[in-house]
Length: 436
Image: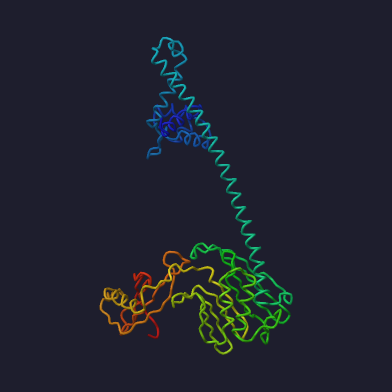
């Protein structure tokens, strides 16, 4: 017997068990009736009638004029009910004289009804138990998530203070330290990385320092230091004097960061910084390139991933100094990976691919379809970025084709993205660039 047949039988006999529902079936077998008419006949509260009508389910049908009538299933149910009500006068007396075949069918029918009722009860109990178990599991999951977030928060807070004290070497004992903000976010744009941001305020009677620290998947990612108050601006109070030279300061910070971290890529970075003796220069060791730039009293030191002569600058550690004071330390080296460092398409080939693609390119601006334009110059920049996975860098050429004049829509250039490992065109766009 199919599940739909079982459900029909279950609904039929469940409905026939209540006298009010039997009376509703009897009334509707005689004529179609509205809700109000049935309410007058039954003399029960409206909510009770609504309940009974809902339980009758597919046994009744509500028509467009608001009246109710028996469905085909309802008519069959009423026939069974009427037969059962008439049975005491004749059925008991005539059962013994029924043919054996009919007796067997009646017995099988009764057994089937009993089995269906038993199955329905068992299913109802099982569903009820499953529902209760689901609610308990759901509550336990929410509790575990809260506990996990709390554990992550505690761990990040300890690491944050360690970065402030042991890496930046700010003497927290000389300040009143206040946690202003602690937020946790699931970054869907970064492959669901769990990102936590903590903001601290370090104050003395003379100055105030604001620090923002970021952790991604419980790994340190960023420390920004801002001198908010102090006239004249006071440098942070350090545990020990800091080097004034950019390379010496960067070397000390990376060494201290290495001491609180177990990341192996810091080894080559430390070695590379130890061998550097000039700023505004570039050095390479293995897959690490050092680029140190000084401008007046400010400086930037970048340690980026490099392979086969091409730089993957998104995968890097960056230090920024302002007035010889560390302003920012960021680490995105651990976050990104390089899927394919083999660059099969050269700069010149990428430019040619872009020019060929532009021959069939057109755009619409203000109702004007532009199909004819002249390219007078070009440039290509190697800027690896994700293709299908948001944290995996793929070799990529960003080609700019400069036009001879400004076309409709303010367009004066066309940009084309070319995957450097396959030569496929990723995208092409009409652009309006200032200063071209």
